[in-house]
Image (cartoon, rainbow, N blue to C red; front, side):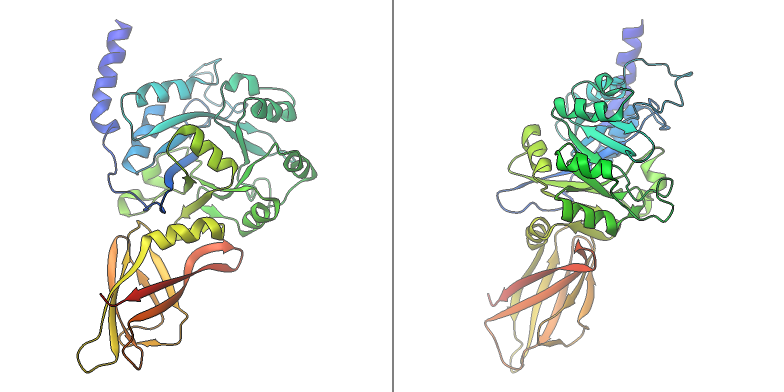
Length: 367
């Protein structure tokens, strides 16, 4: 009877579980593969409010490719109502529901939950969460690495641990990073972005991560019906296999989409923007030296641009915005008719370091 009930529940879930966002959020650079991930989410198997299947439905609706189930190891506020000695349980349920569809992959993870100076860390791509449940958090981190997990610091700017909201490394963190036992850091967590955490990532050569840390519903927290989105870490890999995605994470090949911001190392973010912003169809009306061309934003993100070249525009200022998946016609006053125009821009919502925006140069040519 129980097996029959489980089958009925699963069949009822199919229409909503397998509805998904079909248009890519970003075009991948040539010879690369982009994976949209959320590596920090919670369910009722720690302090979340929902069953694991809801996490799958949300991720599919929002166009994600991979999620990690990362319930707290130590913090179990629902254990009297939902007793579970197996810390892999949320992953087991989610991965079973994900079978039979190719869009979304689920990986196993866990959150090591301690006070400072350790704080909170996530380990993803783990084999057995139970083995990470140790009295000594250093032993938990060592076990995660023994399982070849990718380990990253969670919300180092969290005001429950840092009353001023400034991300800092403790001496324990510095030692773990030196020993290559920590591999990444959240520069974005839930609704916060930390420039100090970005600085730590760049100086310590840690992978830049941004996650939802969702406990309730993503629709509510990130206002998705109104056009919002959760923080997403995009992994840039050579292919879409799990081992290739994992390797790219260890190599630091990521960027983060947070609200209207795109955050990442220049070498990662630049080819993505070059693949998602194009300039085409340069032409001059007869007898005029005002060239017209079209800028196209192929991505789901708003692009806020400032033109830094020598010319001026006829109908726009040098600062303008291109909405997601849209085009903008610009008229540029070049003083003479040119076959090609260099178009240097600064992406004002593209952050490659604290107080440093991404610079990009396009070339538009006559057909």
